[in-house]
Length: 388
Ligand SMILES: *Cc1c(COP(=O)(O)O)cnc(C)c1O
Image (cartoon, rainbow, N blue to C red; front, top):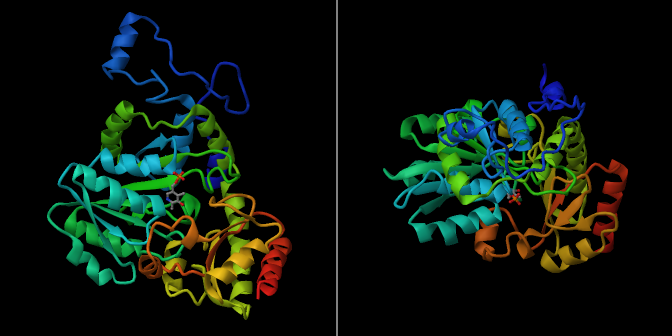
């Protein structure tokens, strides 16, 4: 079966009630057949559901779909994308270990690396994505993991997955890729050599801004080690969220085609607009990594980042002038969203740090939704004209 068919037809969970659609298993624990069964389950001699902190039919069903799509061996589901990112580090690394990360990581990932992990003796060196020659210099004997995000949020910088996959062969680190912006439909890091791939399922996987969720899939031995961590620390995804996200996956490829098609048109419109200083979109020929984007991504994704002339004051007037498009910090929703990264998601960084990852006072991130493209373009164009 092709990918889209599998997303619709694969149903790992079937109860005896002959439901056509996967039911929701709202139960915290599961019953043992007898005392011996309970003992064997806890001894992990046999597989099965014991307690929903460990596993649940709905999370298992969702994990199966993403494992299949990413070409992974195994996976885990989390209460949020950040819970997954944290578990992929805390579950595998120890005090004294070192991470090399590309600088343009998600805001909370950045806080985790700089403010929290040092408390437990795990340090991070950041490398500029545009200077990959610095990368090898950053690697030390104690470097256990390389963490990257491609395309990055919101700078839309790309990391060459083939290149990093080759380097991994030389240095033997765990390659951990946040694939949230692309989704497994647009980009699959595992064939390039990624050991772990993480997702905020809150974004395109749910796609309607309803629930939080995270997934990490990859090598079976690493997932098993992480399982021990999550079993005893409890960042599990709820059955309801897993059920919701799994249902949404049935339309993932259709939605992504539409998000990407509209985003490219929005990017082209903005690039032509005299009030716009710069537009970033991976599939715009003016993107510095356009060729790379074409090589490793199926389409350019649903996010466009641009900078208006006139800095923060102008960006504020622009955002307040939007009609249909609402201001919120989510993305990957069926509704188009505008975000001002410098004053919200990336406000903890200073001006210099922001500029280095392509965020300026006038930068605005648009998550292009599924509304009629004419309405999206009209709203953006009107707000641009009227904020002069
Ligand atoms: C949103 C996001 C996360 C965090 O996910 P949550 O579900 O909000 O915890 C991590 N990485 C990227 C790239 C994101 O966009």
